[in-house]
Image (cartoon, rainbow, N blue to C red):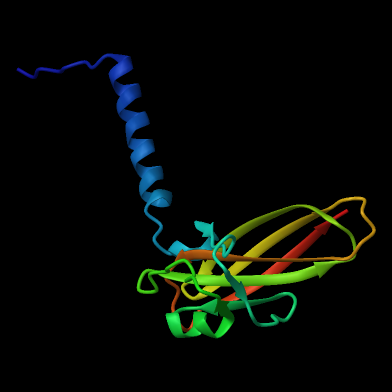
Length: 162
């Protein structure tokens, strides 16, 4: 005697759909060929300021160039202080990035975004919105971010919005 079990149609349908889903996941979801750093990754930062410290920057930076400061000795090449000290930076964990440039008009806003493109390649996107003032204006800022390698390179990409 042969016993034949009939499965309901819904059971067969669900089983078939599950099989198709697993097959599709195996074919596409497990592709390890795409590298982790194919997409730019946004890097957090904070502003580093000498405001109200009695210190000032004492160098002339080339416009549209970034200076990477990775230790106290490098920082002291660029800062002069009166009878106070500059804000402390833990260079074992952080790097300072100084960027500057100029415009032909006044500036109403500056936005910044730092991104990692690959292991040691970064881009700092700076978007400068001009106002109606017909006076040339310089801009500059210093960012503090997680420690970067000595071999890191950072490209400055400046966009002017009129």
